[in-house]
Length: 476
Image (cartoon, rainbow, N blue to C red):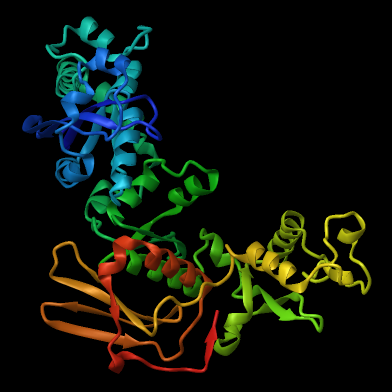
């Protein structure tokens, strides 16, 4: 292969990437058929190494006690793998562990993969066993340090060199294409197009033959995520069909993940891409509003709307995307918290509700339960879905800087509404104020997750007064 390769092998604490951790990593970076970089290190998994793993690899908990964590080497490892085909024996295993480790550090990992186990099966179907030990014995490969990461990576590289020498070039190229599933790449999208995509946060757009917008997505690494689409990460019939229709890709970069999330949400609502689920829904939502009966009990009423008056926002218990979703939630809440069917809007009768008759309501509808006790259960039932109180005394500014530190974006936010945003670079800055503040439920969820993460505290400060604008009404 003339492409850049990263031959990788890992030693781990177990077989599951969900629960296991990496304890050693070995990488060979290959350029034009020559090893240009060699990397090997033990990794502290911050967990116990089972005696079975210690016996297999020779790596003990004592050996890794002073080793670096994966988080501390993630940047170096990412650089070694960047832009290269990921090569491993049983690549699904190594890929899964690396993807999980990168995910823990906030990085995405979606390279094109070449599994040498699958390649061996494709080239040598007459043989039954294709594990690395079998390949070493069958082809006389050199591996002086078996079951250690770098030693096994070198054996995988030896296998690639062996088949390049022994196999017909055309047959080998066909086998590699089949294993890497290159046929998933639409004929109208070439590798060079993918290689030119930025590897920074932002939004990407897929367009079809007639320039119709098929899909809008976001990622911390645009190139990696787009490559993941065509590598088959999305294995649904809908996802595969979308990929076959892509004729053109556009991108818009952002300084960080928050900017990408907000931009993606806005573009989906405004442009209605064919394959985004949200694009098919209207902007109408169902609100669950609360009020008090004459007796002091909390009552719930469902309301379909496309706008919220800011002074009434505090009376909203929950926001739902459909009437069906709202009613299912109310039925579950009534059953779990013993709420009155009449007071939460599931019945319109005047007497005892059906729940009272079958002993699932404690009698609020007939005055047998004190309002305070009942109301506390209503609040508890809606606690997870309730629009949270704005946690700051006023408007805030969130700043995200680019990876190179030379630019960034700023967002002014007040009461969960995006007031404005701007970009700055090399001393220059521009700021776009939003004339009409909008309370958008998807934006609310994005901002809630962001401000609730302690890692983002350093990015938040009080917004400058000159950037603030005030309006009376907010829209969804």
